[in-house]
Image 1: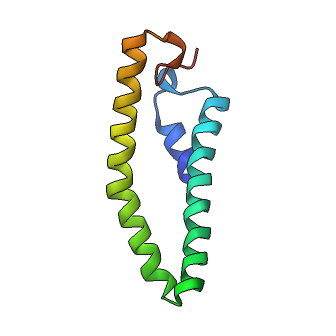
Image 2 (image 1 turned 180 degrees about the horizontal axis):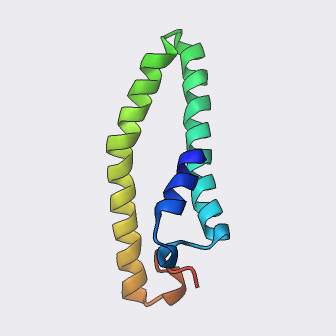
Length: 95
């Protein structure tokens, strides 16, 4: 979280998100990292492989295929939200 704090304070003051929104966004990333960590530990026990090599494989899959799937999903949901004109479901609009 230290680097998230550094990043937050390097943003211009008029562009900073409120603390509550910032915390929710960063905790979402922390939960994802914890999930990957425990999945890696579980898989390394099951396969008796080196945990470091499994972590590298998990990271590379997450950083490539995972990001591509997230991008496609966000584009699809954004298109549906625009088409249906659901104002409260627009990405980045916190109200």
